[in-house]
Length: 192
Length: 298
Image (cartoon, rainbow over all chains, first blue to last red; front, side, top):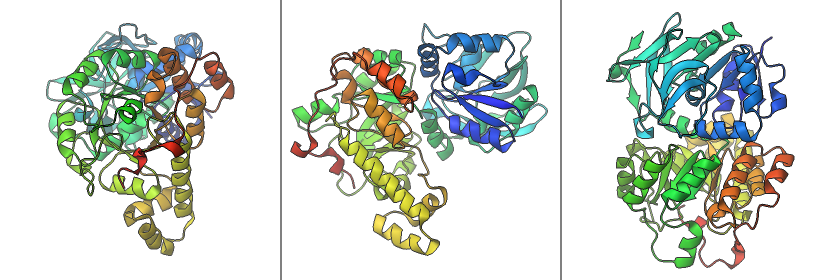
């Protein structure tokens, strides 16, 4: 059975662990370098991307994690997790770093502040309608060749990608883990 | 594939409570200006709480404590990329409306400010912005949730640097939840009456064993070990008010409390970040207080 790590420095860790367990995967919380041993995939949850980026550095996780993902470890990121995976971050801190797994430009809080947060149904290629919660959600404003767009959402200013894949990396602007949805995680497990 | 804009629901209970879930495991820091907000963000805070005076100064200066000047909130919003919360007085729905119009990410209907209504809390269902409220026991927490609060923080005693009241409130809420969780169905109406809490919410706690919204801790946290203590007692994140900017070295204290909150189960990390940290805020013995802020609200 695949053992998937969930980065547990901060954020909605419990919800991701619950979804993984519901679809028959074991899940381990990753806080320290030792927790990376033996995982076959990694979920980066929702939360605050600047906080996670800092705690990855102070906890000594940045280098070993970068090595693992560059070696092909499958990664699923939702919301803050997507930001952590994007090659370029707009409206972030000037010193904000990322794992650079997805060749996309992502704008933090691109859909607005909390008062603009929303729920909607997103049509995902190969899956169908998926309920998604967009909470201070990041927006993918552009992407390069090699990135496959699996779903887009038009929030009134034209469609932008909200679920993308590049190789073993799956980035999601919304939170499928909050709406009782399991199929995005099932798709991720098929990459593990 | 594209979804059209008309199928979206803004400000649903799910996205309000869900936003609180995103803050779990983090530290929310009180800040009184943009410089402090920057320090908080640099240290890894998940959000800042914008206010004019930290609770220790409100306690010292006296007078009526109100919502912050919108200019201060806007300066802080322009300085940091993390969420910005702000406080409204208990029952002062017009202050909350102002904060919502400013695009504040969470409103704290707070006993730290001087209450504006001695009978009614704000009808929080009427807002798109989510609310956090304080509680000293399970009944109070469920009444606030019944009014629409999407996040509960144990009150503690703000501005004291003394964690004893935070511990009392967390332990009280936890003990009452255990009691409700182990009750049989026939006992729940009586428990709801004793707790003065809505029966449907009491039933929900009986079923799940926890609150329907996240529970954070506030009021008196002054050291990394305090943060570890309240997290081990079941808090899911911590609010630190005076504890950071009233300490000898706010930058290091902020960083240390962030790390201790993430690694609260690992005493070696808490030890490492506590080492040579300098003085925590001086603090006060709660028995000698003239004004207990936790008694505001009901």
